Image (cartoon, rainbow, N blue to C red; front, side, top):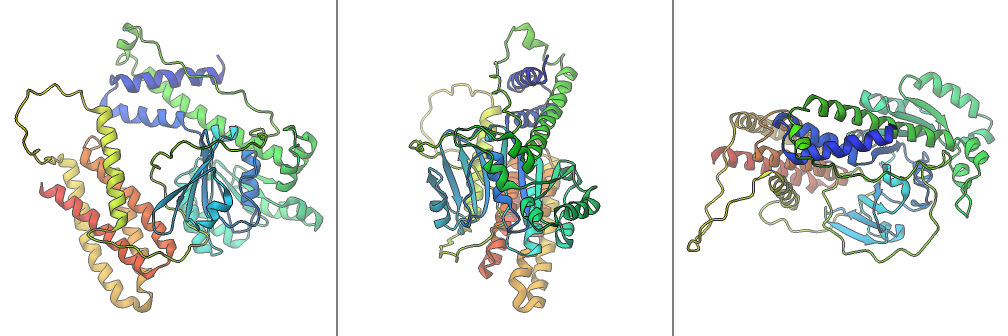
Amino acid sequence: MSNQSLGNRVQAELKLAVESGLLPDDVHGKAETLLARLQKPVRLAIMGMPKSGKSAVLNLLVGSDVLLEGLSLPTMQLSHGETPSATCTLPDGSKQVVAGADPHAIAALTPVFVDMQLPLPALAKITVLEVVAPDDPTAVHKASQWAAKRSDVALWCTQGFGDVERGIWAAMPDTLKDHAFLMITKADELQDEGVLDATVASVQSMAKDEFNQILPIATLSAIASRQADGSVNKDKMRGSGGLALISAVLKQVEMGRQSVVDMADVLLHQHADDLAALKTAEKTPEPIPEPASAPEEETLAPPEPEAAAPAPEPAAEPKPEPAPTPESVAPPQDRATPGESPAMTRLRAIAEKKTAAKQAATDPEPEPAPAAPAAAPAPVQVILSDATRDAYEHVVAYLEEQGDVLAQTIETSGKNAPSAIMALTVEQIQWLTDYLNENGDDSDPSLLRARDTAFDAADMVQLMQMEKRDSAALEAVSLMLQIKKELQADLAA
């Protein structure tokens, strides 16, 4: 049986096992995670300092000129969609959908993050995240750390991999380094200057242990090897280094999927007795269509002929987006903040929807209730498990201690207080997120809601930090206090 057929069989069986509810509770969550990883494309991040050739590499990988030269756009994520569309996160946290995903229309909105869906074949295999940050080592470091948590494979673009870049990359997770490539971009320009060989040798000596491979590439030449009729000039693609890059990415995609298939196959064998009822009932796994055969090695996805974009369907409500590091941020817009902060209102809605979706998937069908006179609904009683209660109490105690630290920071930081407070708040919310993810009762709905809220809050405060507005520090502190109040309310219920 081919690896592809095995993967499809394992995915179908795992999907049926998850839906059956026959797996033990402590295994069901792991099975869901493995299934989600099998169903989603590999996440690839393109990183590097500004003007390092990231956009050209993105265009090469997806087989289309998505990012136009000279157009300033922020951090952008590309994924597959039937019709072109872009969801733009604006500086005030609101979102606006651009039908057709026109780059000029997107740039005119001055967004801080863009989630673009395009009907490109390559995006059925990978999602691509281009990380954009100001020309500042601290900003690039923060943006790269943010992206590392959302990536399976990384490409770092450079022309020399100097001291600043080495310092930023050294802090990246080792698990990502094992699946990372150092791209020496603009190799044709370096060749014309007579320094390509020396540059490659120097970079090899400095970084050979930090990356899976080091690959020089003349990206524009690789893109130019695509012909108007959709064919590829193989010699030109090979000579540019484009073939080596695409082959390396395809190999990582296959290796990543095969690793998950192996883990899922082991899980199914370990719990074959629990799943025996499925075979007894003679339930047939839902067939999964064979994916399209791999494209020729010269391109990850053949370019599609240009055509007018079809009118998009009404945009579905966009899913919560991670807070990126923008290259530039428009002046903030005035916005009212009655009651609670807009960020908390958004996060609360996100968390409630996620919790409702999870409960709808797991709660048993309610029995019909006898007719009764209409009455006011009883308030929902929050019952925390002992493990969740202990986790909440620890978090609340921590946040109360950090309140004193914030107060001291305000007194001692002078005019730098806003940035110092923001940095401290980002650190505190990240701690809160990590702690809740590692502690408490995983089956507790209240904890699941709190984890979702904390994760989205961590992304939101990073976006606030990039806005560099003094008022953003106050909003971030307010957001953290709102989370604390929610935990206290659950404890008091």
